Length: 349
Image (cartoon, rainbow, N blue to C red; front, side, top):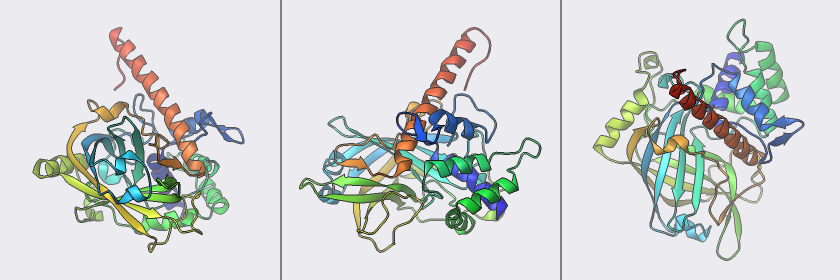
């Protein structure tokens, strides 16, 4: 159980990013800066890169609305026929040179900008629910998973104490241990595990979670091939597939029933809940993040169009602020690197 918890800590650190209130405070003395510092302490420093999802590629395409979601939300993205998309596909981990086959989680972030200038930003992951429900619990997990300098591994006693205090993590542990690994970004399902409030034209409000479900059939990565796979095989696979044809995902909106938890991302909703096919995402091109438009985008999940609003899930406001704090820290590092390069002292990648 303890090694699995250590792995879960790494997954969550990479997949979820960081948490804090918009003002910089989570509560009980926990701030965006402290959370970012804790995440940085889980691995070697990589100035100028994202603290989580450090390795990825930029992608470009179009979201085509089905029109069906207009009954749930007045958001323009569900009304106009198509919306341009800039996105990023990435893997778990803070290492920009990490091996693709070692990363448990695949992730997708998107920015959709409608013809009236409104934006919808979303960051999704291949896990179906979050391991803990609160920023404080996530911070505790971050600290428990931090490597011991003498061993380079997490302290088993700290992991055990965390699991005892937050037993709900066992559900995520079971998923991480049993769910097959995808062998492509293109055949992976990406889930927005937080709930959001959709407001329709008649003023009715529904709580919704969304998923992007691939039209490309799922194929599992053979565990015996993980050590043999090229370190950048996901990017190579993506380029080869896009050279042949676009990649598509169907956006499914899942509507909460009255008793479903809408402020706890660690609790999945039943599979039989009502779903709406909102439209189809089509990706047609990829580009290295070093030169791509996604490099300097903060995929803040609270940048939302009219008709979509945050629920009272505490993780949403938390993610928003530390995403901003981490982004600003990264930009300062890049600026410093450029200045250092100009004086011959080196450069930040």
